[in-house]
Length: 351
Figure 1 (cartoon, rainbow, N blue to C red):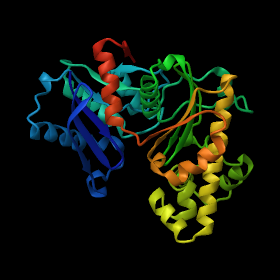
Figure 2: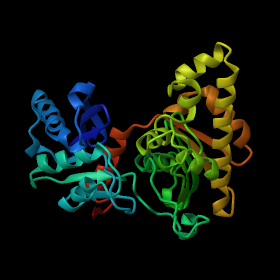
Figure 3: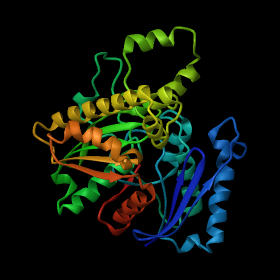
């Protein structure tokens, strides 16, 4: 099965050609602020689509000969985990902005249009998948509910790879998986479903490299009404200007650890505090199964840091065995999911 994989990011367009789960070729296009300057995300569409079409031409790729075009998923209505066919309804929901705005929506429409109805246009485990049990959605205020929004693609791919590695099915295991990136998500995977998960995008999680995480509600409310910040500025603080960035001026773990090596005790303490909060989150996520989880798994870019992982394992290795799946290979995860759908291992779902 030959597939074109598309992953549209904030400042990049990643594209790859896969034969089953084997990558034949890939390229990442980095875009300048001038190329992406616009008042609305969808004004980038023609530019982004041309990048993908030019890539296909450069590789002599005839789209009619593909088995599928696969895009990383957009922010749409809550859905269950799986492989989905991209259709007009999904794209309309992505364009509406009701569920959030993300460049991946551009990739979904590009995949849909390039397929021309001749081959499947697919997406796998978009970030809005919702398998949370109802009691996990409660807050102390009836008007507000916790939401499921996290790095679902990587979570699910890592869970299934781990299960295969130990000769079991994902649906047989209880796993705590923690994605360590600019944002942190800690999920309780119970027999194949994410029954509880933190939402770092909305400030419901341990703080991360550039996200504030959970804040004292009263103090956050005072800050919001202080008149010091506009709503847009507060949104940027919540997601992009908080976390370790606020303490160190960088969201790069490599740069943060260099500052610590050079003796910056304030940044070291903040980094320790981030690890402390993550460990508390993982510990809490371990309680929902009513028994010890089968494994704790760390994934994401920050999982490459032995220095940071050691801080976590020191607090958590008494709970159960810890495994590391560093990085977040979204292109492979999309290919793996599409193969499961195209081969009939999983049903391709309608949005």
